[in-house]
Image (cartoon, rainbow, N blue to C red):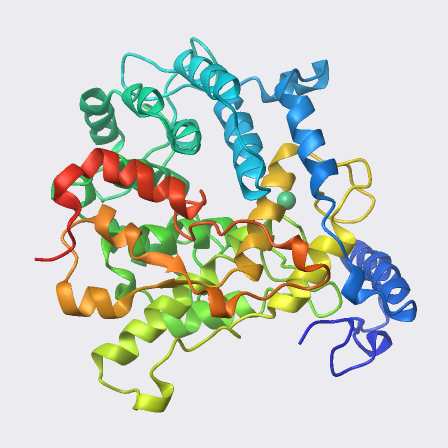
Length: 434
Ligand SMILES: [Zn+2]
């Protein structure tokens, strides 16, 4: 449907308020106005069909940063594996060929963050942390060589994961650290890619995640905490990796997630009554392919669909056109990189997640439910391999060249890189037949 050529004139879309402005309502109105002006220009000039992803400029922005970052990045000293992941994943999505020199440098950099625990720290000599371990393993998966995979110390990594595990099924972010649903997702994603998921690792985890879902359908960082786009992604993706998604209230989560798409901006907010932000294009956007898979699977199990309706239920669970309009018209920085919202500066986090969201809205990535129903799934690796592109469902606004590579809705690395690392670590055990 989209915003620019949607059913209602742009001017009718602005949020209404009660005439008593507050700091929040004012900043919301200003944000709507800044996006509206960009959309109006495109609409008036009738140039929606010419909207372009500035691929080369974004590649140059990321590529230059890989050659060295300026001193302001010192604040990300504890996030080095994240920087690697954000940059390499952006390049991969954009179709940039990561050459052997860069692969070598990437492996060498990540190796310096590895600890004897098997986990990775945010920088050399820093303690092992679940989030940067996820980023390090995703980076190695993107680099995609035997040398990259062999860096992973699976025996110790598994022991360290168990140290993060709590009696209630949750995970802490680092030894002595806080419980957080991000820890659960990061451990499960890394363990799924490297064939380390066991009943011991996941005992009680699905029950704990279920407790993180709130009355409104959103999922919070721990039980009793307000729902949030990033936490919801972590919760749903974790459940899906364990094959336990049905324990969540899926219709309520869908209702909550759908309500986060903004009516003027087209992008997502991370929580109700917050501002739109480009990074939620992935954190919230990627909930939809997973929800689509779950809803379709539920209908299969109930034998509900007739032949006609047997397909995937919901390419339209969110407005893919509106999200692309937001990312391409409001989130591209002219000198390269993507941004949270207009008038902000680019950074590698937002570049990565705007592009990941763009990928999620352009490519229709579906889960092979028939394969699962017919043959069963023996392990989480096999489950992750059942995600594939439905080429007929690709949808691109503007220049057809805007299409970026398809990302995996659970691990957020491109589909071929997921396949390669899983096949490497599971070997012959990956056969999904029982
Ligand atoms: Zn953001």
